[in-house]
Image 1 (cartoon, rainbow, N blue to C red):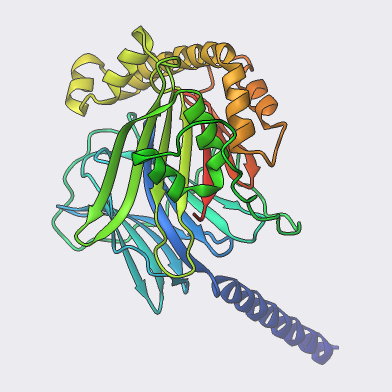
Image 2: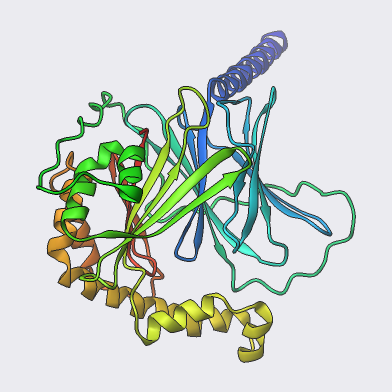
Amino acid sequence: MAGRSFGRKVGVAFLLLWIGSVIIGASQALALGVEVRNLGLSRVGERTMLTVLLSRPASPRVSPYAGANQTQLVVEFPQASAAALPPEVAGDQELVKDVKTEVASTGVKIILNMFPGRPYLLQKETVSLKSGAALFQLSLRPDFNAPPATPPPATAYPAPPEPSPQTAPGGPVAQEETPAPAPYPEPAAPSFSAPPPSGEYAEIYRLIPQARGLWDFLRRDGWTVAKSQTFDSPGKRLSQAFTLTNSRFPDMSVRIAHVPPSGPGAPAINIVDLAMDRLTGGAADEYRMMRHLSFGQIRSKYEDIGDFFEDALKPLRVEIRKKCQELAERRSLFITDYLRQAVPQKPGLADEVLARIRKKVSPRFEGVQYTLSEHPLTILNLVDFTYIRIYYLGG
């Protein structure tokens, strides 16, 4: 009996070891084959968004590093390969100085060089696309509740444990076993009689031809290019940005960001926002001013940093969301026509967007964002200044 009992224990031990090796092997297999195809950094309201295009869904390691003269946030894809990624991407001048990329046999690292003394909160999310590719999004925003930072000792940078991930509003989008969607429809001929696009508008048509119907609609409706920017490095164009405005809609703008392909076979990342960021009035103006206060200025007016967030910023956000709600109601016809041109693959999208915007604003809830479509990826943000963001991949 004792021998049989010992044999059973040995058998169980070998079975557990075998199961462990299978699990480890499976996890290693999952880590292989991921390609980092492109990346971009953008500023949306008070949030800084790092968007990474992947060949398939993957969850990277996200680790902060802090030293005497440098603060970094490292996004690492172990054992991943990469296209010809840009070695450096310009920062946002709020939280991120710049972004560097490192590609080695051990994987791909994306290093965000942060401004010291500016604490932040992070959210991360991987959005699966029906084509099999995926977008990893890292969202950063200032942490006004954090205590004043004390200078760390001038030693080597320790690698602290990875912070527990925070669930992004709306939660991650699960990958579905569905057939790949049809490609973007061929650009249609202009639907109105007007001279062909020229200047900066012609550049927008060239960069994002799959949204030609949207550009035709905006030109016909009187939207013009109010601002154009390029973010270049010597001998290489990294990204371009445009802002469209219309005197008939003084509270709204259309913001366009184009991140070109990083190498052969990698698509461009194009981001188009219909944003209510030009909203004016006491709450909006005060909110913009408060977002640029230094920690010293905040502490001179508020006894506790948490009071600044709860008693000052949060009520203003609620008021701004109500104003955006009213604005969306007045502009509902334009929003409907805009989305019909921007996302013709989903005719009912405008009704869904307006229904979510019309929901009662709760003063206890800071805000939320919804993923409404995957092809193209469409996100509705209701945190402060409402915006509708659409990702067009390729060009």
